[in-house]
Length: 469
Image (tube, rainbow, N blue to C red):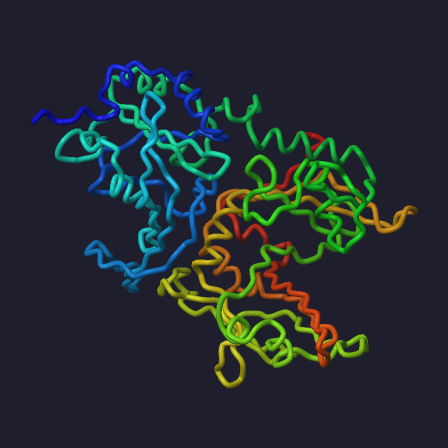
């Protein structure tokens, strides 16, 4: 019986050029295209290497990150601590052929091994009708040089994969194409950035425009892209996002051109009197809080409003690792993280609030927080902001020119910052009408950091005067 020809072994595939491939992707509503030149061990046996940490890949949409133990015999001992742990994240991936046909691959996923550390692309052939085993099987051509993997991310977070084989026209084109540096492993096709030379440069240009606008009334961008007056306490962040053209949404993804944008309040320029910076606001996914609900949690661990508001209970206070918070009598603990070696030692690890009876009042799994950190914090910009009362009600805001850029991070860095006391849990939860049938809960579980310690969360941290850059 004649073997079926692989989808990348046809004459059409061998002669496909980059322009035609991008047009194929455009029909699938693709917004970004990334490329990786495959190494000899990037194949179905060894899996393909995608980076050191999941935070190296914020541009690749993933499903929920799930913790598990691995039975791999490759597990090593590092600094005296043996670990058999991994985190998996599913991918909504389909292979694309040169004619534009797609082949869903339901078992594709990313696997993060903290013990190495490394992220591998796995299951990319299993359960799919795609025929590319010749170029991914190490016993055939799966170690060949000149192979390129192209990943295109669609508007609905579907990932379309294409393989350029050695000696194909596309492989030769990619060898001579310049890319944006999406990570240490992936490049990004510049045509997907609307002509911007670099996202960093475009970000700085836009922030300079906003700085030069001076005082801006509090506002928020509607879902229709219309700027509307906004007077709530968090208007400083929404006003900046509105000027960047970012509408509020519930998706955990970067704000502007792949950058997480955060403003921080100051009393004057250059930055003075900086307040703590909120890193993330995830709801707990374990403990009494989840088992009995937020209302019962506040009744059990909260306290009467300190300003005297009747029938209101609050839950707040600065919770530092291994210290009992005086307002709640709860202690924050890192369970599954080795502070001395700055390493995760338990895949099921959590950040937990523990009461005096060793009951877990609330907890956040490493897997949940890792997913948030991966999507939002690979690169971030921090913009100083002054505020003053507005004659039209609410406040108006002025954004400074001395910004801060954080680039390159991993989840272990936020855990290390918490272990050192630089980052902490600082909630603002309130329960109104606490003794009536019309209880009203406001949830806000937030992790914050001393602003002067932000540099500890990134591999590279820059202070930039955008007026002179």
